[in-house]
Amino acid sequence: MTQLSLSRRLRRTPFSQGVENFGVKSYTVYNHMLLPTVFRSIREDYRHLKEAVQVWDVSCERQIELRGPDAGRLMQHLTPRDLRSMLPGQCYYVPIVDETGGMLNDPVAVKLADDRWWISIADSDLLYWVKGLAYGGRLDVLVDEPDVSPLAVQGPRADDLMAAVFGDGVRNIRFFRFGYFEFQGRSLVVARSGYSKQGGFEIYVEGSDIGMPLWNALIEAGKRMDVHAGCPNLIERIEGGLLSYGNDMTDDNTPHECGLGRFCNTKTAIGCVGRDALLRVAKEGPVQQIRPISIEGDAVPPCDSFWPVLSKGKKVGRISSAAWSPDFDTNVAIGMVRMTHWDEGTELQVATPGGLRDATVQPAFWI
Ligand code: THG
Image (cartoon, rainbow, N blue to C red; front, side):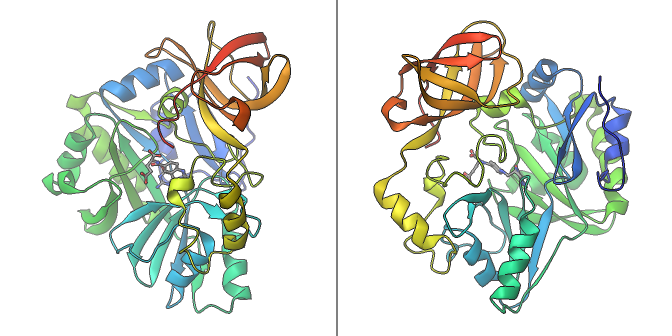
């Protein structure tokens, strides 16, 4: 196997030692930082995630902190989701768009206080766009990347594991809400969220020095729960319809094309940079949209470039993520499909590297 050359530009995380102790087999790079992708195998990791509990080093979900009287105003400049009713203690999944309505990122916004926010970003250099808007708009706000590294605890036994370390109070955290919980005398943001559909939490670990102590405490407390190191799982996230920025969408796509229209309130999101552009595209409606697609036959290889989606030999879309799903007993995929062919049940072909396969548009349960 080809190796990644390590250097200062490719950042390790506060939990990398713990990840290596579990024999991580593969990494990807995300926000210039290591992100584990495989421990035992993608399929074993998948089964274990659905049956037990995993601790994920998702430090690469970097935070952009907004601090100051104009923090809320700047946040609303960034997204077409109306933030006026958002309260401290809440998290919102927010599309971030440029002046053309193109997606720049799809982070989780964490409202710590009226004048303090974290933007928990997907894989793009959003910091520079945010700094540019703050400076160009003469806003009274500081923008930087704090020493905060999310650690996710995901799986059906996540509540029990978290309660063992932080106390039973964590059981009362509602979905996409957070509270403050103590670890070794430090108060940490703990949210019920995470990049899986199995349920769980994300701990925003503030201060790299407590990274390994917290990792070790979770692993120790989880021994009787079959805890294991894990990571966002390709199969599980496609089954669950969780999008991956840079893979399933880029700045060429609007939130509506990505099926994220439900997170846009473009009419009332006054100040959003892409508002005029999005008002135009929302009126017409998108002409292509993300769909779950099943691909027949045995396991497909990893999708590391777009696979053309065809109907009667004509290109009508593209696949951007695909994996064999043991539970669905088919290949599951995410693709962008033209309006003429996006209805549930539409039969298509996919040009995989191994040849043409039959495929079917599945119900877009998340739209
Ligand atoms: N958690 C945190 N930061 C993140 C991610 C995360 N940053 C990078 C990446 N993931 C951002 N992308 C997503 C994509 C999906 C979700 C969260 C972040 C997600 N979606 C749910 C869904 O679609 O079912 C819930 C959305 C909702 O109802 O609000 O959770 O995972 N901290």
